[in-house]
Length: 165
Length: 393
Image (cartoon, rainbow over all chains, first blue to last red; front, top):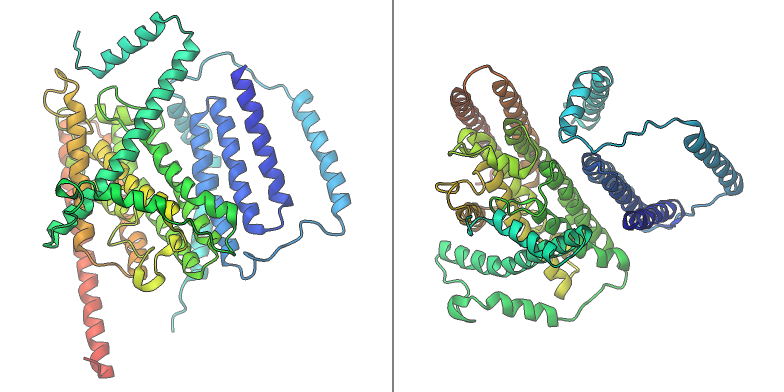
């Protein structure tokens, strides 16, 4: 009962912030709302007893991704004070398309997918199991992601490197 | 039954609440409220004492007296300062982005206060023993970064903005060696729970003694994360006036100040927990309440070390600061993590593991210090040549 009320409040907060991300006229404030919405998602993870994912959400999305977005906005000239319009000539069609796509996705998620449901407490060694799964069963996707990040890292160093005179 | 054991006291308290005929949900709620109030009260009042301590300690180091007018030994000086800040006019710049501007100081304090929850003050004395305690600490740190960025941007002042940039650059860079340093005890203890890590350090198996290089790495990155000298170029007066909080005055400035000192306290407490055995010490098994005493002794020792550094060291240049993080601390952290992971898996007795780790840590430390020293000597030589050529002495 209480949990449900909290869930509804948090969900409304998250959706509201997500809406403000696309509707606000100032790009920097949009980025801040994006962070608030990430935070709401983290709270929902906590409600689902997935603390690890919640903390990872804060660490990666707020700590790394959102900070990078905000940094990029701050470094682009004129983006900070300028008021950009969130609408353009295609606003109507884009809105309609998004609503139809959203309804279709919700329909599939709610009625077409068989979600595995387990009525059990979260095991105490959930993180250890997650770790073993990452380097055991899912090792190839894990390593591919690492290689991708390494490539990005090397690319960034190549771009930022001082030219040898 | 031992009345000096906080765990038994907790049991007694729970039985008392159940005796009042309260539902289980209410007991959880009341306990949460009580713990929150205790932690808040402890955190906020300790800052008043900490500021006095820092001023007095720095004063003594620099051959001054420090505050000595208000109250005995100047103890009430901070109280007077706090009252002064509260009565000051609250100024918001005309062109500031109001909501963000007002939100930033609160967010800065929030990010730090949240950390108090996972600090084990003694056996059984912990807000919540999260099984992801260490990760939680790292995650909350990233919210602090956002607060600085928001303050720097919303003030609509170029010095504040530059301060904000520097803050993000520094905090993001030093977060990486800090996480690497913290993951060494986590690897060795096999758990991320703060309480679990302390329990693994029984009988003087303090991770800071076994792995001094990781401990030093943590201390250096903590100094940087706390924006303390020699890493205080975020608020370098001679360059960017006061950094991201230049426009803040009165109580809002006090909030940033509060966050700063609270962060010092908590970073010391984390260092004591992860590397100096937290509440472990002689006779803790028999008299558990001694653990609280040991914990505060260790925390204060690290705290005084931080203050000592602040009172004596000059400031780094920004390029030196970045080079130190990326060219020295990050590689060193990676090697330390690799080393700990390898040694933990070796099929040998624990004592031998500790010995191997200790010897290799000292070797790494000597190697890194030697390399940095060689580099600095070479740089000094280069400067000398350049100035002689251009005729400047």
